Image 1 (cartoon, one colour):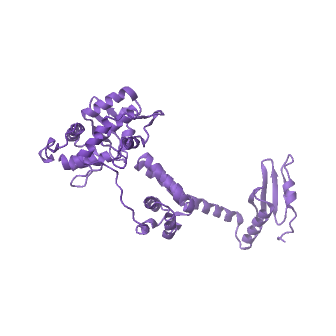
Image 2 (cartoon, one colour):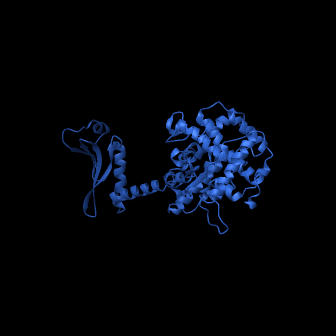
Image 3 (cartoon, helix red, strand yellow):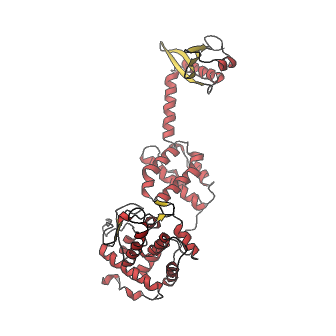
Length: 410
């Protein structure tokens, strides 16, 4: 029997109670009552603490039934016996719950993705990484505070990821979230770092690429004769080897970034950093000029078939290469490896110029990063000779190492 009298209400009486045009109360025992209002039925506990009468909210009926309301009342009475104010205790618990939720792995992970990660990588890659966290990490440990997650707990999560390469990527993502938590004061250490040797190693897989001139010549001829796609697909395939930009940068290119008269393409590289200025060889200007009549004068150069408001699909060029018989031999990204290899090893160009044209961060001897508008004229000459070289390859002339003299003589 609760202190202050026996229980008076029954479950049936509580269920039948209804608002009758004005608020009223149904009293149970030991200060517990059901307050009936037009907006709903509310459990309340009336008690005294430090000489003052106070009220504790115990929930809304029927979400909180009579039995649960009495259990809440009894717990409050136990706190009072220990000289603890039930209202203050409830507020402290709620504050702790809010702090735990704000510091949970999922909360910090989503904050890191929104504030940092999606600005550092291309849109598609950021979306894939968020999906990996949502699939593999948030369900089992997302609700736990970041500082409470242990290395064995995270290892158990990673071992449930079937593909080893995916597991390693997920571990890397978890490490980035934990380090962000450290920097924002919500974690103390990166336990993912302890798992570097805990997962089975995976074989390194590079983007398939044709780096031998004879092999590349065959691909160029196949591209020239390709008639299985839309004009935008054919134009993008022809531009990809000429400019060797990242595939996402090519398919998301916009007309407002091009100056065909000046032969320049000014854009923001997908991996951040300084804006990129790419000189356009004559062949690229011709391809873009023809494309301008189709998709210009504004919006995406290579629009989706669903309309100008969206760029070409990420899989379009890969599918075209596969259709031409180059599946597992060449990827859209592979044109970058081909250019890097042939320009430096066959044609003798400065690796510094090539890396800059690839959009990579290039530093001088003092460690300062070059601006990506540097060596513009040298890169213009290099890209024009590269375009001419590809023309000769496509036409069956392979041994062209003498087309370009050694970079030291330039």
